[in-house]
Every structure is written in structure tokens, then in C-alpha cells.
Image (cartoon, rainbow, N blue to C red; front, side, top):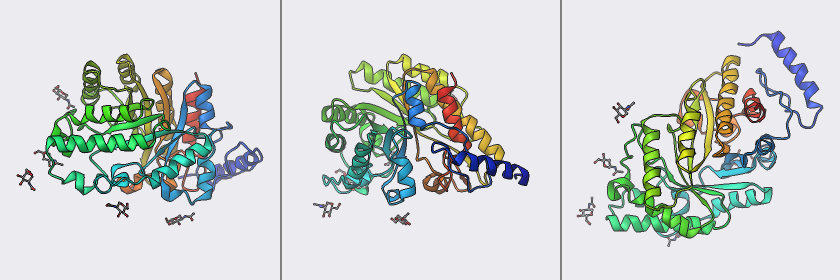
Length: 356
Ligand SMILES: *[C@@H]1O[C@H](CO)[C@@H](O)[C@H](O)[C@H]1NC(C)=O
Ligand SMILES: *[C@@H]1O[C@H](CO)[C@@H](O)[C@H](O)[C@H]1NC(C)=O
Ligand SMILES: *[C@@H]1O[C@H](CO)[C@@H](O)[C@H](O)[C@H]1NC(C)=O
Ligand SMILES: *[C@@H]1O[C@H](CO)[C@@H](O)[C@H](O)[C@H]1NC(C)=O
Ligand SMILES: *[C@@H]1O[C@H](CO)[C@@H](O)[C@H](O)[C@H]1NC(C)=O
């Protein structure tokens, strides 16, 4: 709940702030918004020595000009990840029949805007066409399919990607390998096969393994570190680790820095790849204030470890967040609200980059 007096004070502040072209738009919600006056999150991240601050986006949102006006500002977002249009179901819906139309739209947008691209993703158990998931393939057949998919996909964007999430979500939460079609048929052989095919297709793209619940210390993170050690021992190309960071308000692990340092010590870079911080609805001032702290904690941890190259949020506005669809009763996870107004979370990100 909020008091009328508080709302009036905020409304006056936001009218005054709206006079500055760099200030946030006046809030149409009853909650306090951002008061930060910076040219944008990527500008602040770059000034702090990071390569990018970026966002995921998706093709169906691109007809929303209020949305794209923010998306296209490379001082706000220096990096773009296609949320869906480079996944297997979108790019190879039938065996050997590749379609890059949706992905190319995002690629062209990023190129126009001068934004770095992260490719997402080559091998994942979900959003996988039935012909792969239920193909009843032999070991050799499935390895060939993985190599052809990764090689063709990564090759199509050769020279245009900063990094690729080659392997996505290979582990269960207890640190055992996920028993998906790839593991059931090939064991872990699909992992080096995918990484080698990606390297051959684009020698300059950084090759990442991306996962969730690996952000803090624990069995799942230990398992991922062990995989990276094995890949390096075997001479398999592996450059980076993606920490998705889909968190709950008040639930950011306290061991982020300790965990991140363990990856740095393995000689890989890493990135925060899918950050959002969801809350139980409805929003309250207290939840928004905690969310601001949570966003800051993640940026603080990235700033504390030089191997952290950048941060990507999993879309920037609650208008297009995946959260309410995936977690009924939860939402408001992004730094911009449904009306494209900046929330306190925006200021938490700025403070994380600036307050050192
Ligand atoms: C964009 O297109 C989708 C359908 O693909 C539609 O639902 C939505 O209303 C459109 N948005 C705008 C702002 O035109
Ligand atoms: C390939 O896919 C496209 C649509 O994605 C379809 O129109 C075409 O018929 C497919 N071709 C083959 C050989 O499956
Ligand atoms: C899967 O393939 C094997 C060998 O080709 C065959 O023996 C088996 O019947 C197939 N199973 C199904 C469910 O198609
Ligand atoms: C993989 O094998 C496990 C154990 O046999 C089984 O439970 C699971 O359904 C299999 N997954 C797929 C995608 O075939
Ligand atoms: C982590 O793994 C150890 C054994 O390696 C096991 O004893 C422990 O229960 C596991 N912890 C969790 C939370 O799964």
C-alpha cells in the first residue's frame, strides 16, 4: 500500500524530472520510479570497464515503437540476445531445413544500432523439434545432427557474434547431467561435439555453457566447474560461462562473488546472461525496494570479478517478461514496468556500476 501524500510528492518530483531529456518519464503507476540521471545502463557499464549491458528481445515485440525506441538506444543497451528466434525449433524445424528469418531480423537490428550480439542457443533440451526429441537416433546419428545444427547455425552468423550459448541447461539441480535426448543417446559426448563444431564454424565467437542455479556455490556449480576442467584437459574449446540469474526478490545467493571467482580461476570469462528478479504479485513499495537491492547485488558481484564481461537482462520491461507465463502469481521482474517506466531496480543497476 502507498499513502496519498507519498504519491503526490513523487508526482511533483517526476514532473520536475521530466524537464530533463535524460530523466525518466513520469510514472503512470502509483509506485516510486527511478530517479537516476544517466545516459543509459550500457554507458554506465562501459564507464565501469565492462564490455556491455544488454537485453534480450523477441521478434513479436518489434512492432511496438515505444518499446523499440528504448531498445534501439545503444547507450541504454550495448548488447542484444534473441530470446527465441535462434533456438532449434526456430532454426531447424525439419531435418536439415534451416530458416534464419527471425534470427536475421534481430541480427540486422543489432547491427543497425551498433549493438553486440550473443547467440542463443545451439543445444538445449527444450524448444526442440519433435524430429530431434523423438527421433530414436543412434549415437553416431545424433552426434552428426548436433554437429550439423551447431555448425550451420553458428556458421550462418560467422563473424557477427560476440559469443554463443553453445550448451544450455545441461545439468539437473543436484549436479547430475540432465537425462535429455542428447545425454540418453550420447552420454556427454554431445558437449565436445557441439563446441568443436561451433569453433570450426566461427573461430572468433566466444563459446559458452549457460545454466541456472549455478550462480552461487553448490553441487550444481561444482558439477559445471568439473565439466569445464574436463573440457580444458581434453583440449575442447570453451571460453565462457553464462549465469542466467533468474532470481526471486530477496533470493539472490550470498555466494555470488565466491562462486564467480572459482570460474575466473579456471581461466574462463563469464557473463550474467538472463537477469531478472521476480516478485509475488501485487507489487509493493517494499518489494520494489528489495528488488532494487537485488539488482545492485548482481551488478556488484560482476564488478567484483574482472572475468565478468557484461550483464544481460531477460528483456527490459514487464510488458514482455516471460515470468508471469512461467510462474503464475509472479511478475514485475524487470527494471522497466509494463508502461515502459523505469523502476527503482534501474537505479540499483546504476549504483552497482557507479558505486565503487
Ligand atoms: C504487435 O503485433 C502483435 C501480433 O503479432 C499484436 O498482438 C500487438 O498488438 C502488436 N503491437 C503493436 C504495438 O502494434
Ligand atoms: C523448409 O521449411 C520451410 C518453412 O520453414 C517450408 O516452407 C519448406 O517446405 C521446408 N522444406 C523442406 C524440404 O522441408
Ligand atoms: C529405435 O531404433 C531401434 C534401432 O534402429 C529399433 O530397434 C527400435 O525398434 C526403435 N524404437 C522405436 C520406438 O521406434
Ligand atoms: C532419458 O532416460 C531416462 C532414464 O531412462 C528417462 O527417464 C527419460 O525419459 C529419458 N529422456 C528422454 C528425452 O528420452
Ligand atoms: C551435494 O553432493 C553431496 C555428495 O557429493 C551430497 O552428499 C549432498 O547431499 C549434496 N547436496 C545437495 C544439496 O544435493
